Image (cartoon, rainbow, N blue to C red; front, top):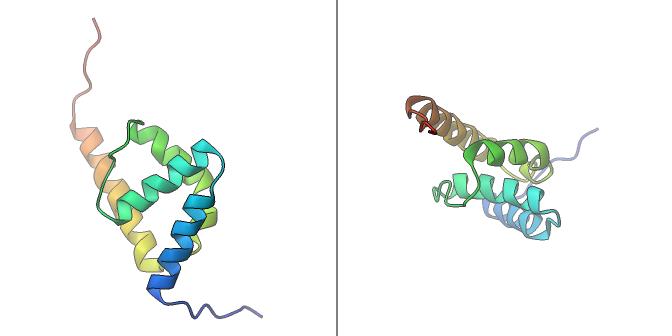
Length: 96
């Protein structure tokens, strides 16, 4: 038997933010901050590369992602896809 989650979207967001803030490992926190920034449209403002942020969020963000609604999760995935498309369309600089 499963428990019904009756939290409001606002409460889910607060729980997600608490999970992000409680993260101890730098990689975990960076991944979660990436997810948080994707949801708040303050995209990719950090110094880390997009690829490492995605890897970190995939590796360590799942515990906090449980607090998000399906719509919020889909928004994260949509932002990741948009950024991936941008990355594929942007030519890489050549090193001499």
